[in-house]
View 1 (cartoon, one colour):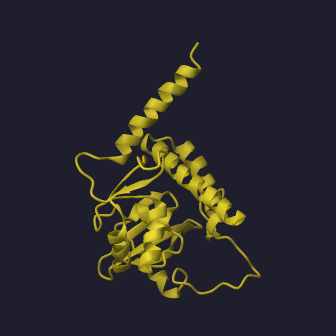
View 2: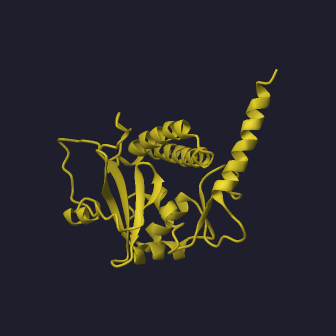
Amino acid sequence: MEVYKRIRVLAEGFEALEVARTKFDAVEFPEAVKIVEKAMIDIHNLIFSKPIEPATQDNTVKPVEKPEEKVELTERSKPDELEYENREDLIWIEINENIRYAYDEENEVFILQYKKDGRFQTLKKFKYEDLKKIWDALPDEATVSDIRSAAKAVGVNTGNLENYLIRIFTHVKFGGDLTSHNRKIGRPCMVLIKNPEGDFSLAEENRRRLEQEREVIGSMYSP
């Protein structure tokens, strides 16, 4: 139970950092984005033991090496996924400088990639039909936790990559949008809006909020 509580705390911290990264990125604070992304990668490793660790000096992401551990060949490590390494004909959408995704319309799959040694490699493939099952099971406003619960309910293995799936669900195949406020729980976190209306924009919302926060912080240190 204690381990479960720690994982929950780390997961909430990861979501909070994702909000911060998005906000800093929206107002073009590159150094702040790098600091937050490093913290996100550290927490991601602690929670999921994923093959991602802090960036090297050349700003690439290297896999976590566990020499004596038996590695099971999973969906994300199958050799046939190498076919997507150099698929520049696809439209790649950056989640951050080290993570990107694209939709392969011919095969109806989403490809999630991470950067290693300056090159992008496939982390996992998601069948569109599987993601559609998750999408249909989500409430109108969904958090990362909601995505995790929906995936479990419909029997889809996400590889504990829900923090990236929430971004993929903003693709035109789904039409969702993101906000950084959740009225249900009253604290900032990434929230997927399934049916956005009007001129909803996460970037504009975050830019406005960050400007307000900067004004408040600035007034605290004003003479």
